[in-house]
Amino acid sequence: MTTITLGPAGTYSHRAAKAVEDGDIEFAESMTAIVEAVAEGEADRGVVPVENSIEGSVTESLDAFSEYDVAVVEEIITPIRHALLAQGETFELVCSHAQALAQCRGWLDEHYPDVEVEAVASTARGVERAREDPSVAAIGHPENATNGTELELLAEDIQDQSSNATRFVAVAPASERTEAGSKTSFIVYPNADYPGLLLELLEAFADRDINLTRIESRPSGERLGDYVFHIDAAAGLYEERTQKALDDIEELAENGWVRHLGSYDSVTVLN
Ligand SMILES: O=C(O)C(=O)C[C@]1(C(=O)O)C=C[C@@H](O)C=C1
Image (tube, rainbow, N blue to C red; front, side, top):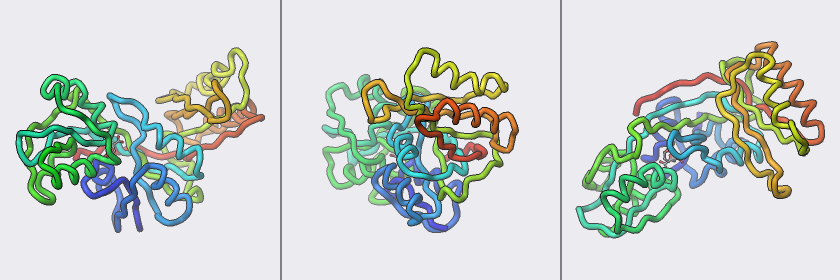
């Protein structure tokens, strides 16, 4: 089994992938490339972040789920505890993934108000930059201080909320979609706009007592004000009520499309 995730080695995505998948792990540079590799059969599984408790959605992953046909087979929730790593105490630039920089914005403003920040493709890419250049510090998992050239751990637990956590999903080829699982993800493109449309979409679930755990609108890209809705429900497709809700939203989106990513269970991993 080959799993593809965000690289290089040492990213939080890599840690989440190792926690749930056996076998080889390969790396890509973007969430889109990971989802595409799974959709095209180049990898058996992909692990991508979808949502963070401080910064919200990882929109690149959501947009990739609209673009490529894949199944979600597991949800992985993990606490994210960032460290500041560098060759020494004097540096001018902090490099990390945009999500990680945002999760530590307050801490950086307080402790290093004068340093510049630069977003790079992943936290581990930032660590590489810090290894190459003494004027660069990185934000990433503390183990990056010891899993290559030694870096100093200048500070730990620098995320703005101690409860910082990220939700990842494991994706598989669309043929592996299953109806078994306690959660289901839907993507709905109604291709329509009238008063009460969103209410009707939500009623499909509310009328059947299905709790929604998330709803997110993403621009469809077709025209301004036109949206694709990502809806996560705390119910499995094996349940009659979920099938009925799906029938209703398919009817509401008769001019657009509905895709479900399958049903899946959730695990929490501490790493
Ligand atoms: O750069 C990494 O280490 C990642 O795995 C990406 C990512 C993200 O995009 O949310 C994952 C978890 C953290 O929230 C910060 C960054």
